[in-house]
Length: 286
Image (cartoon, rainbow, N blue to C red; front, side, top):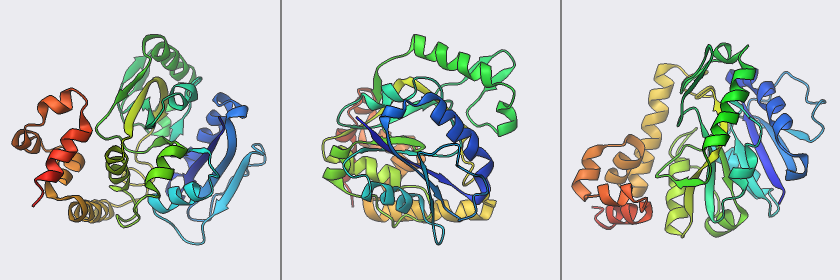
């Protein structure tokens, strides 16, 4: 099965893009790649992509939201499964097979947001800058190998940001495109996961796949000011609450334990019965 890959680069995060693409092509089988779009969100990506003939640069006439960029990839997927990638990633050997093997689910790899490692002097913590990684390339490969040796299978997750997400054709055929009403970025991935679950699909983490995610380099740890981050967060949380209700927003966007307690969700969440938990909250929506 070939896949249609899309990656977005922004003015604030360009320095991460070339290492991401280099590691992608170093560790992704060519026979698994149908197309690769590099979406230049600000039409100012300075580097040449001639070294990667499979990369098509799509220059947006104006900056687009996360949801709109992903929707463009879905519209042009032509029946292929879609993998939508942040550009602040470093891919490691064998990252794709565990992600591609999970059926009937939106799937994401494991990253340093979920599991932190230390290898020698390299502290693979949850959020990193490029300088933290530079010079530790071999250590990351050792971490990824260690991770693969000890971890396999997949696990249902309540929510997972779409930093590196596989959306199978059967999922987007069934539930369509992302909702673009949430703003620049935030909330649209949680919304899509809810819609997928209600349609009978799962959201899973491929435990045997490991990628390095620098985290937030296009938004809150990149070009955004604190005021811009606050405004973006306010907009998508309010939009989400209007669509799904305040309590589901508190549960999924804020992680409010009072919602879990009020609705008695602990047994369902512990058992991975996330669809039932969501339906309970929705059924009591005021």
